[in-house]
Every structure is written in C-alpha cells, then in structure tokens.
Length: 292
Image 1 (cartoon, rainbow, N blue to C red):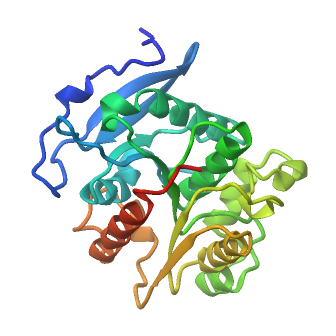
Image 2: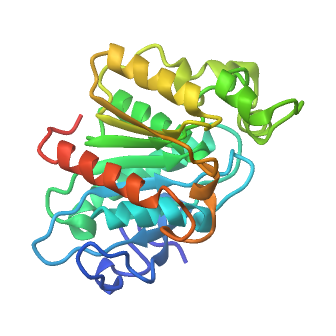
C-alpha cells in the first residue's frame, strides 16, 4: 500500500538508539512515496535526540550504474552517521538517465519536507555519493540549484563518475591493457544516446555553469580510476569561486572498491577513520554557512 509523500513506514522515533558518536547497530529500512504512484526504498542511519539538530544527508550508493544496492552503500552511510549525520540512503533505479536523477531529486525534496522530524528543527541538507552515486549527488545538486529548491549546505563526492570519456590517465592506469571496463559499460547503460552525454544532469563534468552550487568535499585515492575527473571537477568548482575541499588518500590500492563492500566500516574499508574525519571537518565547516 502506498504511503503518503510525507510518510515513513517506520517512524523516525522507532530508529535504534546509538551512543554519542557511535554507529547504530541496526539501520532502518523503509519505503517512501516521492510522487503519486512512485515509491522508493530507503535505508535510514542514525537517530536524533530531543532538541538535537543533525546534518541530514541524502546518500547514493555506487555500482558503476550496472549493479549495487542499499547493502553496497552501508560503508559510506555508516561513516556519515559516525560523523553525526542522519542519513537517507537511496535505492535508486538502475535504469538509463534521467530516471535515477529524477528519483534522487524526489528523495531530496522529501527529505527537506521531513527534515525537522528526521534530523531536528533547522537541520541542514547535504548530498553524498560514491562512484556512480557521486554522479547522482553532483547531478541532483545541479538540479536543486536550477530549481532554487531545496537549499543545500554541501555535497560530498567520493570517487565520483563524472565524465564518460574513459581516457583519463588515472583510468588508463587502473585498467591497463584491458579493452573494456565496468565504468565504460556503466556509461553505455546509463546514457541512452549521444545527446545525453551533453546533459549536465547526466554528465556533471559537462556542466557549463557551476555558480550557485554548495560547498563541496571531494575524496579520491591516489590510484583511483576516478581520480583525474574528480580533481578536474574540483578545479572547475574552485575556478567558479566555490568553496571546495579535496583529499587524496595515498597508498591505498583498495580505494574506492572498499567503499562498495557489503560490510559496514570500519572493518571493510582501510580508510574508514580518515574518511570519517573528513566528513566531521566538512560538517563543522558548513554548519554555520547559509545553505546555497
């Protein structure tokens, strides 16, 4: 049975208790309706206490647009929760553009409408995603900017897939002599036609106008296939006068694959502590900023 757009199948008050700074042992799975007849599965991490205001993060898992689900997003979502956020992780459809982006924007609007009961009165809203989910986070951020709603306090992009041109040095180094790779295959599945590759919501690296986007945190690894396109996007954001923080994790060959393991951090990700520290700093630096 469909729930009304502002309803959860489980009340936020029923979410599991967690000690301050700790990751809750049991996230809460639910289904929300973001438009008439359109339901989306989500997984909520964290719980606010009375009088508390937490960062509210809409999060998108990775999977190169070919695979993945809520279980693959558990590591990053748990790290965001560990940094003090209430996280809404989204089971977006693995279908061609534009449906995943439209679904993500629908969840973002739902989170904004429900921000007080989810994360506290005046909670600030963020987007986050790893790999393919980083593409969606960047795209939904552009969409929210263009619609002037809802206001965003920041976007967190971890090894984001931003450019379908599979010729960057970092991607060539990662794939070696292989004639194909999962990221190229993912782009073929995501983009319906060459014209989609020109659309900034499908390919954020193609966006000609970046002004008005919120503060951005970009995390990559030094041997990361997505390293070059992510850092190029960071440079373009910075050139547009936007606040950008970037961090490159060194000597970690498992990044970003460790982010997609179906085992919550820290056990599955060697960079868990460092990544959570970056989230902590980003939330603190944007806490007093006016949302974009």
